[in-house]
Length: 251
Image 1 (cartoon, rainbow, N blue to C red):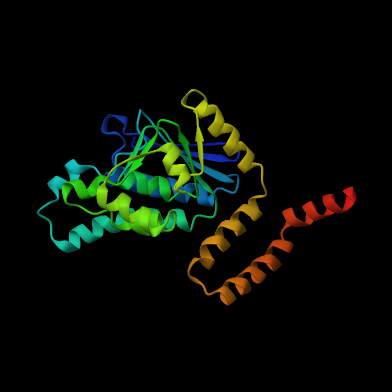
Image 2: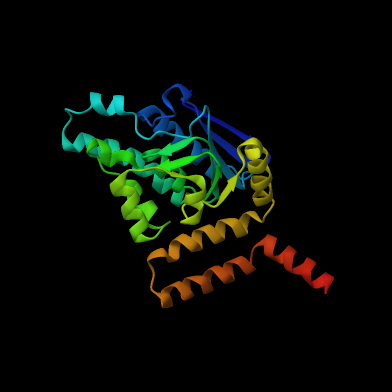
């Protein structure tokens, strides 16, 4: 099975499961990944999605063997294949639950894009991130839109054109990832972080994610107006009503 999926409490756990191929992205894995995100979106029990990987590396990117076999296909065939992965990135962006990546080892090329497409990235101190596509005459295309929203333009340009990997500490410094944990306590640290996030209001998490990404391309005035609408919706949720009542009682 290219993907392992299970739900523990309020956390849906999606695990890339091609360790012998460094979890390289092929058609089967991409399809299973898309299906898993859809399952988590529909499950009312789930508040947070955790994306992790089997083996020593998070994901090495596209399966180059599959790409080589498809080299003689026409542009429409290549476009259809590219759109399968694009659909996964879009599903993650529009997913109603926060998606957290737990990265051990290497997250390269499309694998780095997959991690960066998550809302939060937690990394082991020995993890590496990079876009080496330029070294084989290829380009990190769809993932560019995600990287550009995470780091400065110049850092994005450097990563994309040199193809050189960076360590977890540097990735955190430039804003590519959120937290770095020591290798020895990485799994426990991830569990603590994810459980804390999953304890938050489900409606507040969903509304926050939706609004943050919705205002991405809006003018300031339009973003404030969108915020006003989200504010009104949030006040009407059961979680907010209970939270306000608890706060008022304390006062």
